[in-house]
Image 1 (cartoon, protein in one colour):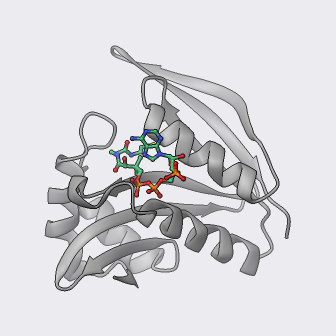
Image 2 (tube, rainbow, N blue to C red):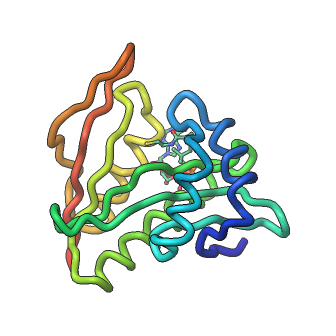
Length: 152
Ligand SMILES: CC(C)(COP(=O)(O)OP(=O)(O)OC[C@H]1O[C@@H](n2cnc3c(N)ncnc32)[C@H](O)[C@@H]1OP(=O)(O)O)[C@@H](O)C(=O)NCCC(=O)NCCS
């Protein structure tokens, strides 16, 4: 498996992968992913297994909040449970540390146990805790906002 910065050519495969992660992730307009590839290549990564994209993480540095915000993460269903997401989240933490940030923020759908456990374990491994910092409700969904502070 190889982790690479998101490139413009990867966008169709990434959008296809995201469409299979419903309801917890959905593909947005391809222009959004073009922005990610062009302007945030060090916080947007794809994972290749041979020539196939099997994982994607989209994160953005927030100067205002002094953190990295993880917006989307998805792993191909055939490759889940193999720590691929763990590797991608670690990549964002390393990038955050490199730039002098010590905090992640993200939202998790209140029904998404797998994602909650992933980030709970991330917090534990980095000697932090998953703190509830708010919520965002839309239609029939409820996203809980969390922060994880980690040691630098
Ligand atoms: C959530 C998701 C990204 C996890 O990816 P993954 O590569 O399977 O996760 P990992 O293998 O790195 O798992 C790390 C830890 O997360 C937790 N975890 C992952 N999947 C889990 C599941 N189905 N049930 C419970 N805990 C789970 C476990 O604690 C696991 O550690 P362990 O294997 O030592 O028990 C993946 O299930 C996915 O793509 N889901 C659909 C999209 C989605 O929900 N994205 C998140 C939006 S916030």
